[in-house]
Length: 419
Image 1: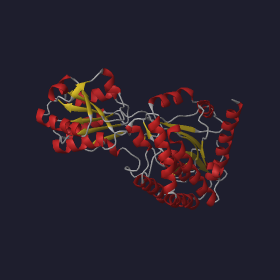
Image 2 (image 1 turned 90 degrees about the vertical axis):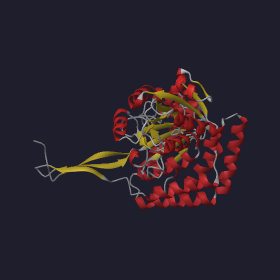
Image 3 (image 1 turned 45 degrees about the vertical axis):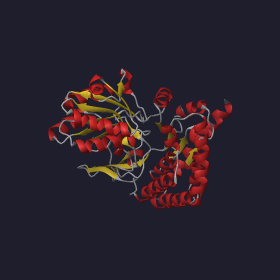
Image 4 (image 1 turned 180 degrees about the horizontal axis):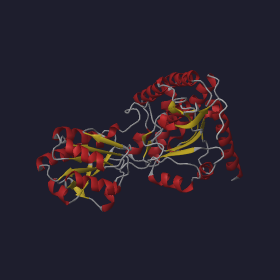
């Protein structure tokens, strides 16, 4: 245990020292490092894919699900997406030094709020190796040092990504310790980092429900949770049914292993049976397993009985819970009971129904006549994200650059003293 304690202390001290340089580093230098990283990722594509294939083979041997393997998989197209994210982050305005508010008192004292980095961020994540680059890039741009702790299933890919990132930092004269990858898999090490109040300012866990709960229970530093995404779509009687079919299929089947995929479909009991059947037919054609209540089972033979636990399940797979509800109020009541505050959608042409849904559902992202799959940092124009916060304080929804900053007060006087 002593060697883990020493390693944890070293990670924290390294990050704290690097953060001191980062908070004064000019934007041009941060952006230059990101551009160097993007070029390096392109040049190293073959090596990245080779390392990723090792993780995939190990994952298959461990029996990972097809959805988990898809989260792990990198392709030339996905690497290009990572590169594009890095470039877009570099192109964003500087999130630091922004005057968020100011006023001048009658006595001439000037008071303002100015954006600054948070400091050192511990980022714990599973499966998706692109998060190593996205998280590191967003933290660098926002002036934060980051300690990255990825899952063992992506160990080879995360290692090569971290090495390329550190090389880009070194090439631009930036402290390499600004981006550190935890190289020891011990869970006890994570517990030590979660209690390092001296060096770590914030932890962002991104992964399964068990991971999130464990972090919340053990952390002595602030936590922003990327909790599970039990996302809902409500189809109202006024919906454009052709569009509804397309949206529901996209939200479930395009990429089922991600947190913004729909997990529960709620259908107004006033929607005519043929329209419901067409939606369920389209889902079945995309190999989606349907689990529903008695009303849905009566409408389609492919619908299997749903248990009470199905309404709270984040499947991350080609499985969908389907239920009939009594209008928009019935949908709101179901989401209020079973939702996780991630992303929920209403499909309706009625402005009254849309307003009721938007007023009644309390989630980080609400969609009107659009797929839940748009709940994503890059789709929102943030360049990338470190996660989708289901908390309500400090950050909510996809977390980009601004979510990784805080502020301080600046008070400017001319010999002022308080009376």
